[in-house]
Picture 1 (cartoon, rainbow, N blue to C red):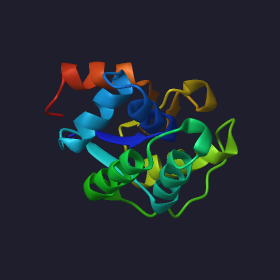
Picture 2 (picture 1 turned 120 degrees about the horizontal axis):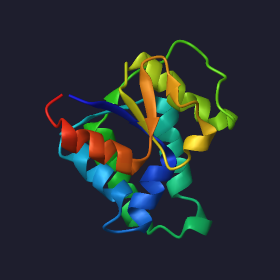
Picture 3 (picture 1 turned 45 degrees about the horizontal axis):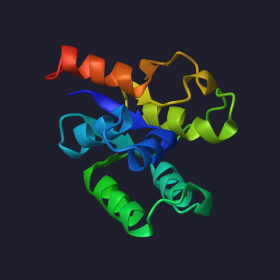
Picture 4 (picture 1 turned 120 degrees about the vertical axis):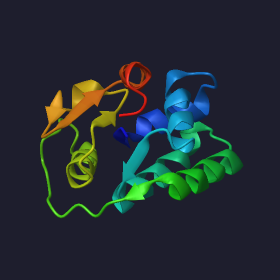
Length: 138
């Protein structure tokens, strides 16, 4: 089964744009067709960002998303600190990917990340959907 770490911007885009590729990634994860890997720092970031007034995400919709996310993620506790992204706030995703042996980090901001980290590829939502479609049982 494909193991993924999902960047916060994918969650935000999914909630703001119905029918989008980021929403397809979330639906894939919610249906247990891929294993979603997260850490407590990532979950805290999801919650904080979804509550930002400038995003204007309905609070009930954001709370429902967080509840669903917490119910389906596989939690890991990274033990190594990493400093390899152009945005220091994104290092938590690399740490999580390494601790959870993730196949992919899914992000809309691939420029903030290295192309790969250890055995993890950094991909867009479209690239993840294309990979899963090509080999859904991996």
